[in-house]
Image (cartoon, rainbow, N blue to C red; front, side, top):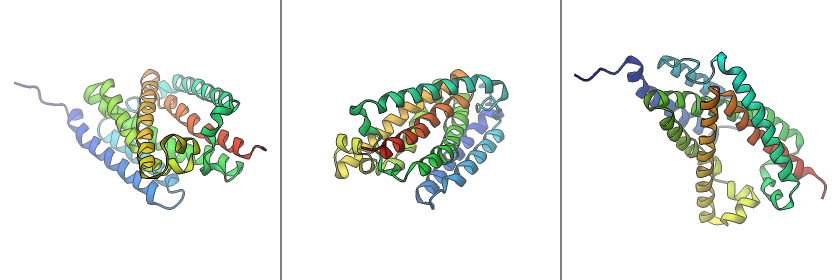
Length: 241
């Protein structure tokens, strides 16, 4: 006679479906809501997902927020931030790489860039995405089929999550426009490239979460790539000449 699935295993399926539903709701709010909607939708969505995880039987350690992992996660995060900062500094000094920073979304001045990097990115992007993809989703999938399944599915969904934000990428970034070209074909190539790139990035973030046991590690790298990228872009756009 086959063993009956445990209560924890039985709860995983509905929790996964509910997690995906929250992802869709937050993505819709971010795309079609008023400016700054993610500052509310992101934290609320993260809180809702953590409640779902608890209801499905996941512990704080299962979703990467257990206290025992804070020190290790913070150490990983500090290293990641330092490496990204050094990488951006070097790239900014190389003329051939500077066009990659010329994103028209960040021409509004250093004040707006600082606000985006220190408020919008951590609260409106990093908090929700790390809790969702490397925390709750990864934890549920890990319980169902192990780390490999958790990483593959979470990273694939993370790539698809970036379809809506990348719809205008070929228009706002000259370096991307030069590679993919204008028009509908350029848009499709830009979106496909963004999905592949972010799925690969998601796999790296999942590995950081697995190795450190903490969401602090992927959150540090995630913020550094986005937040420091905005600051570097703003600095180059405002530089004379």
